[in-house]
Length: 380
Image (cartoon, rainbow, N blue to C red; front, side):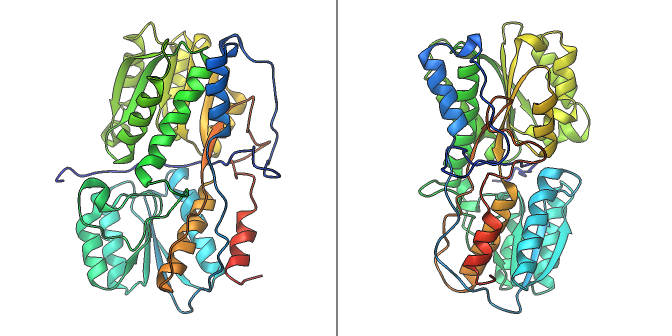
């Protein structure tokens, strides 16, 4: 594939509160809205709230000493990159490794330069956070040839785009779930939430993130699930790319698309962080905020804050990004030991004012994963 793939803003987190003893923060229950009275809508909404998750690995492993790990950030200027990067640094330092962070600055050229620097510095491991292999295929190939192990930090290996595998391992997130299906589940849960909130009558403006591999996967999962709802349909589709964010035209494109779809009562947005980048204001300025239900994919702490304060109906996919970060380090430990990588269990669920919302701050998933990983690694 010659087309340069870019990645964006990932993040904020969650794990189903339905796990016994796993609820963190408040989980309020309010009377169903008028849109959730029928059984089809109620079933979909419950599925969105439950989501899908696992647990951290239970097979112990012992970290090797003297390991040099580089973590490549998709862009430290955005919390959805910076938060998991901090988690990788924290976990790697906890096991005594030498850790170096390189900021790719939301640019595939920057990501590639970081990977090349890591290989030149004879890094044992590189964790590219939120970066697909296909966007940095040549630098990854050079690093692998130099003896560096590439461990997934949420992005997909090159074989997902029809290329040759270069990662020693992707981060295995949910048992029996490929990375493509993982992202499609993201879209499915958003669709379920909108079906529930609209009483199975969702008329959706679907926003599609075109640059990364996972953007269209989210849209694919969303569209497949929405087709199960006879009274629902996609009334419009808006493609957004990284260049729209860099040029500050994203909010205007979104406003125009919303104006062109007067029948829309629902909106699906792939990245929660985009809401604070002008889309929330565009919704408020449209004059239709009270009649709209908006779902988003991964959001950071600011997205959780928006759920708490929003005057319109808004739900975001919760995901514990630091859990995933610890999972990447666990994967690196096992790869260096010649052991089988384990599913890390970092799943997600929909969060709104009525369900799964923590009292404050980011969504942590309700699992004391840090203590569990440290016990696995023999640190406690």
